[in-house]
Amino acid sequence: MVSNVESLVGEWLPLPDVAELLNVSITRVHSMLDERTLAALRVGDRNIRKVPAAFIQDGAVVDSLRGTIVVLSDAGFSDEDLIVWLFTPDESLRGRPIDALREGRKTEIRRRAQTLAW
Image 1: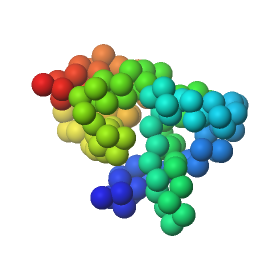
Image 2: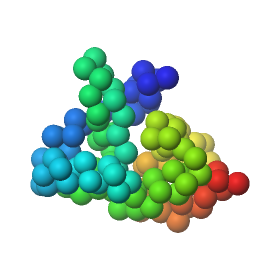
Image 3: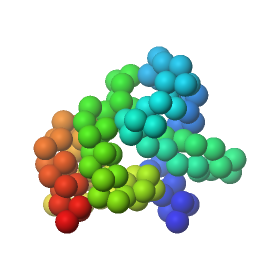
């Protein structure tokens, strides 16, 4: 299924690139993964951990991404599951949940994520 996730997301960033874009150390990126601020998967030919590029916007992690990741994780979603959910187009949203988060539509996405727990 990972190859499907890879194509669904499109652009992935290796952790050192994430650190550079966020202007933080690589150890801080690892902490962000542990804290559920970001999610990563092992993808590509070298099977290294990468973060979807859409999680970064204007030199920062997309606002409200952490809370959405936490809600989805609490609902039992694995990192792969939540990335698939965030990047799967939804007609009722007129796009993907990640795009709605990037546009600042946190409440709508968080509400949808919370309903997945029931």
